[in-house]
Length: 127
Length: 272
Image 1 (cartoon, rainbow over the protein chains, first blue to last red):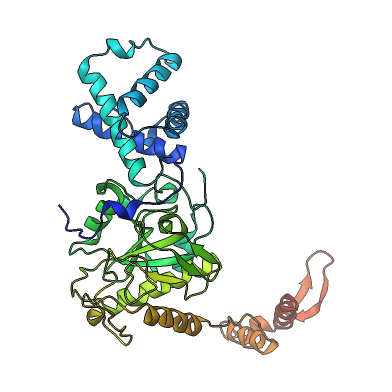
Image 2: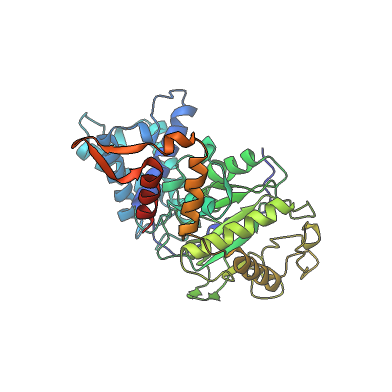
């Protein structure tokens, strides 16, 4: 671990609203990390995604930004459920309803949204 | 992407004389930014920071770009050899809670420094580790180049630490320590942590910006042309230059005369 000493969360504070594209990049980075942790390692880097896949990801990033305008950073499950419902609406393969997902699968989504909401809260991006 | 991303910032730095390096960890710096994206308006100043680290540049970069939960931390890293590394062309996370502070083109509101200022991180422990001359020189050059890029004054700089007043926040001590700065410029220390004097920093930015200005000589005179032709002529035997030119279409003598006369005429014509 590098010795990098003086950063603190207050250094991230500002007032500007979130940018959908940066939220998309962050989401994809987190998904790659989760993929690697799960031992799959089959999710391409952002630059390697097809234009269609990038467009889909951008739409999800935009949906998150639209949602978090009034979001409660302490309720990541609400965001995870909303995004899952959105994915079910546009997915080309059938996706089970949120409540029918395995608890572990739901928890991955909830944790992912918790990280996103925590990040945006630290940076002063939540309303 | 929303906001301003300065994708030309490496060219700007290099043109000013900075040594710029883009290792693989930096790839993607052109579209990298904090959650809010690019700068909402041209940055009003340059923040000077130290990393508070004692590690290799690639370790610093890895932390600033990937390891920190709120990466990117800073727009640039300047290492101890004076090499400049791009981190983010958009707004980054470094200044945070602090301010407000006023500059030549406007005021940064409280807690708005990340999106309204450039952030330069200098690799230094902050507790007495040396600041080599190469690093000091590179940081001044980079700071002045970034300010010039957006129309700021060279003195539109700020220390992360409040220092003796005028800096950004009392949560921090950077840049420090003043006593560890090597070379001809020695900032005063303004507190027990060795934070540099902001007044001294601003004065030196202004002084270096003034001394860096060198008018470019772009007028080529007739004497210059004659000297160039003479140098070229010396490369070939005299008989070659004295050879009479012929119009290859009409098979008539060329009005320009010999090759030497034609060369002189062409050179002066090109300069007129």
